[in-house]
Length: 226
Image 1 (cartoon, one colour):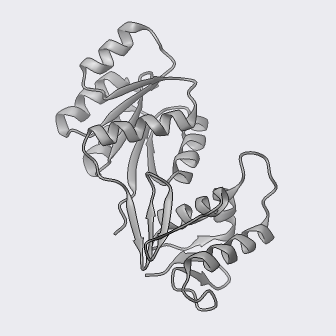
Image 2 (cartoon, helix red, strand yellow):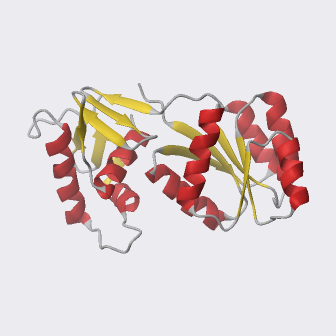
Image 3 (spheres, rainbow, N blue to C red):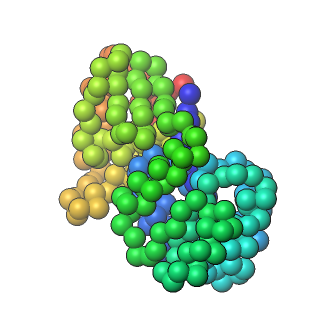
């Protein structure tokens, strides 16, 4: 069963939203975003999220009001993201029910570690996705086939997560290239994508020539099999 972690990012800086969403999705999270108080509360009231990343300073409204309102609705964990590191802001956020507080600029992997720690404290189970005989644990990053661990490269794993997060939909080759673009600067092109799809199939599929997990959608891209 697909149990990916659904995150709502409440932040009015479009660049931060774009880069943070891309990183979190590469780590196995599913992201939605709102840029102000009203939009955030509307999304939150209409959808179920596992975690909220909330900036204190918003162009419309403020994070303290958003946190207070969300906590009245349900007990979803909230982590404040803010450039303000003063003690008063920290105390105010925690008194309103925030589960953690991290100051900008933050290291993305530290943020992910804090997110997972908050969710463990809140009693959330691991995010485990079953793909036939393949089992993907997005909390530990481990992939198993028939109970035996499979070792994927960082780019192979990011490609698999992109397909998992889009489960039920087809991703174009261009969309997949965006997901696996190497932040270290290594060149990734269309031919590279073909190579990584083949490598993934060799590792995951019972018969790579007749793939059941990673399906080709002719002239469009790829999708996960049913």
